Length: 427
Image 1: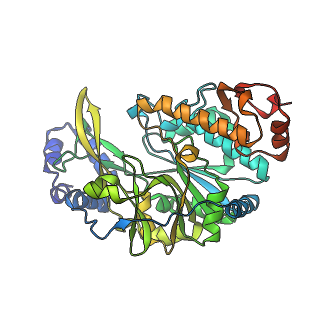
Image 2: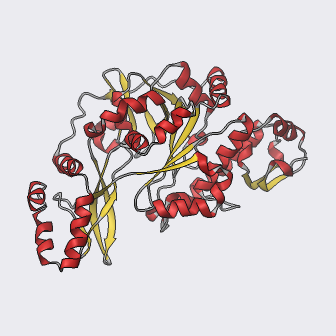
Image 3: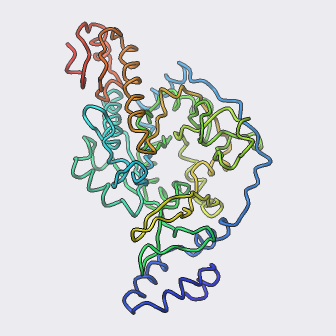
């Protein structure tokens, strides 16, 4: 271990080991031995590596969703060809929540959690299309027990337990501004999840990919837990992906501040974080809404690419032993895998339909407002008169996937729409 620490430029950890009791030394050594040596070496190399983005230009070819795309997507869902992958490794510390982000009660009236919202969307889509839609949830070793217990306690929010799969990210040590590991206590290194870039590797490693293949799944819809406005079963996005024979399709919106931007390299679209572009970012038009469709064969293609992805650095504030420190978290990004796809496309949607991420405490009222406005729009599109809709409403997720019977009820409805509304509330 001493030679490894020297190679990694972490001699201070060796010094700490020599000062510890036999019991504490065993605890720290055990933690270090659980890390993958290749990843540690890559973390060190990428921490000091410059980013060369001179060969990137702005992506200008976003498509718009079409009625034909929607029909094709509906057929894919009816045939049971789509599974979902939910990225849920993050904690809610940035908005003052001590648990996993997915456990946060986000809706204004029923206080439904993010996990509940997405599970109820799946349940509503299953009812409409008369299929089973598998859900794979990526967690971190820091919150896996909490998330699994949360699902168990809530009876998987009406989903069948055998159709929900959990799999883990890896952990890496936090770094200080000099690339040195940081201690969270006397005998423990501070760690964090290493991003979502190894998603496909983990699906294969944990045996979820072959299970999905057995179910004749052809497409994965991948989305983030912190965006309650996203419809992960957006028919037009799935249909566009299939009709254009893409390996990867990116849902995009018009560029806003501090978002990953769509860039072009060698004729293919890529996602680049805004902080790498500096003064060039004003030239970019479209942003990543963090919702992707990938073809299952692309997952298989990525199984040998794990070690070719670079680590990116995210600057964080963390408190250890009542002392706040600036740390650097090493993460691989899922969208870096898109460079290996033979064909990547992007579809442009209005932000109000699909993107309202919950990142900070200040976002909460804006996210709830965006949900309210989206659900007002859904009701109007279903035939409810604007004048019938009161200021504060919340919809059951069945309104996102309306059956013909629900559509007919909406068209006939004359009563005020107020509070929490389910199909059974309409005559």
